[in-house]
Image (cartoon, rainbow, N blue to C red; front, side):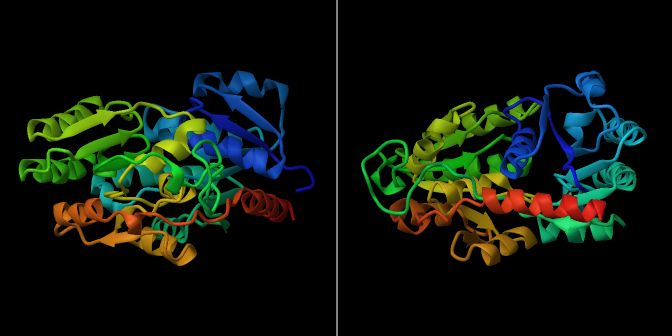
Length: 340
């Protein structure tokens, strides 16, 4: 394709997929259209009649149901070439019926698109199982949080070793929902508190995902009822990310089901090595960035947390280099191949 497509960053600017869409366009140096809501998409595109577009798709940004979201993409594809990066790819672990409904929508979207991209080999395998042909795998990059590889003075651009550290905290980062196993982490922290570790705290570094406010509230109350501390920070500004992630004693990313994760890469960018459960995706990440993850089988999560709270040194690493340039080059290459 001689002219790269217009990338559409659809949704609220704080949404992970929306932000990633904008990051991709900027990394590739290509045009970007930011649209806060799907209801405004058709109107916003009137200034770009017939031109190719790059979408970053997760169904909640494109419609109230998976079918509505698929129809929105199909409608666009009737009038112009569409490339799509599929996020939150359906998988059986989310429940058979939910997976079936979502997979049917993703199949429709892939059929309408001229180019289909995913962010991990794990997602490619899930798509293969759903009969979706993937044209390119472009891994999520490690973001640039301005953290350097050796200790300096505290502040922006400093190594996390130089930051103030919590005494005994367990941190979960990103939008908070059941897929991130916040309840399991809260229960493990509560068990530590109930056993006498009253200085332990749960830090939920983000905001509840829509519809999961009660889920997060119960997690917080579980820890407090056992004598521990718990907080929900709400959205964290980019300028504060390195500091906040560096303060946590033990970072965790215990996803119930995950096919690609920007939050794991953000922990790495802050010089942190989160505790994760073993899965196809976390094994893939460890292969791509050796030594970036700590693994647990989940059989004794309180014990795993206690050991790392007592000695958090294994949770700190030199951050890998940011991958935004590689991201931009990969998208330019994929678009070029699309038009060949």
